[in-house]
Length: 232
Image (cartoon, rainbow, N blue to C red; front, side, top):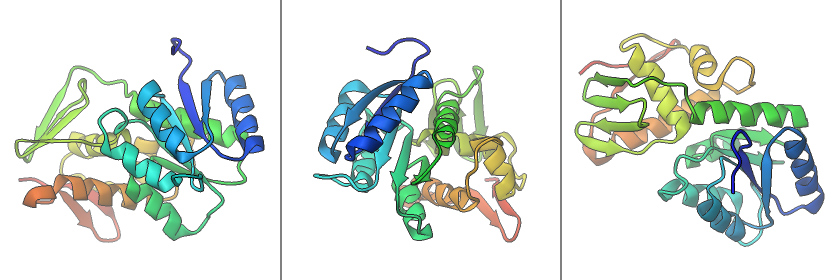
């Protein structure tokens, strides 16, 4: 059972030494941990225990990390759970694929424990935003910041925590053009290193979700500058 102020982190890692290192550092950092040695068990534990953050290795037996991420994003119990992919694969295409599937962040091995702890703190802040009882309505969008709900043109929209925060920033300042650097600071935080392409990947996912069933794209790309929420 989760304890207050001790977020639960599910570690999906098949290498015993890596798993032990992660468990030691996370518990020393004030987190509760649980370990899944393969993709199938990671899926089952995520649904059953509903962790606050999932550390998901790319190369897992039985079901790969990228497949597990896709599954978790498709089911109600875990669609908003922050997921950080851990991988030895540093290719830009792999990072983009992971973000497109729904990962909130992407950490390449080897990494410093302090870096990983900073990434975890960042995704927790994004998944637990300090919001007030506030509703934003603009151009067919309706964002309930307290209930963490979005509708667009009358249809309920399901977004990850990062996508929700990204859309909130745009909706709070409609028609204002945000550079990638602005969005990185406001959505991911100033103290966490995230590449600017991460913004593009999340904008792409956000657009895909919002424009399903023929709905118009509410996000405007301003060449060489960034992104803005367009008016109706």
